[in-house]
Length: 329
Image (tube, rainbow, N blue to C red; front, side, top):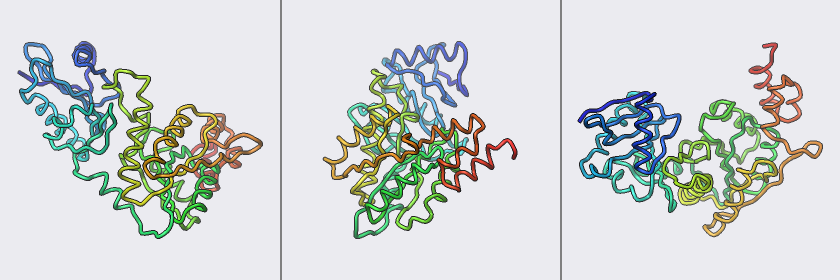
């Protein structure tokens, strides 16, 4: 038995890995940074991959299960993650695998009938939520935003939500898969809401899931992956963040254009109220009958119409855009 690694695998090695995963009922997920395989006489016995700090595509050949091969794969993945400076580790898997990964030091965060999210820190999600909590005798609300970039539409949502509660926790998605880097988006939100005294701006950290980051390699019906990601995200929000932070209302903007966001809003309206969190939909702010959107701002940047973004974004965002995207820099 011997081990081979790829960063990632290519060519025939990659095709062999894909075929092995397919037999295990899994799909190879493009974009992984590192994979490890255990071989015997040229045949794969077990495999696993790493995407940033997330373990993926872990499988053991059916006739070799029970030989601690999964532990060997997980050990190699953990070594590589630590080598890359990643010590807080996560994995998405089927709920039926909870015991196997629990034995290797992973703890369940939340689950649906189809998916389970685990991490290698006991109570990591709850500890993070508790660190953000703040005493408040009144109504505590929350909103989750991407702000790619922060617009006057986002500003209107925050102003309106803040006026309807005593304390508003504003979570900015941390994932760095948007045009505007996560660090800059967070700073723009903080700058654009600094004058609203009852708003607290937070990073989501790794605990709020989007359709972009949710892996689907273990989901048979890919058409359901978006709904599964949404339900898992709402489970984390209501059972951990809402409970630990005393959040009783979730604010969200209406979504007339994006089908994905609109579907998420519908699930939120159906899922959260029975669990004690009211959903308050706030109409989108419009200019000349057209909703303000971050995609419209990005389109103007692409067209070189920097000055026209000024009517869609706060001064702090406009200054950022002018500084970073103007041809006259």
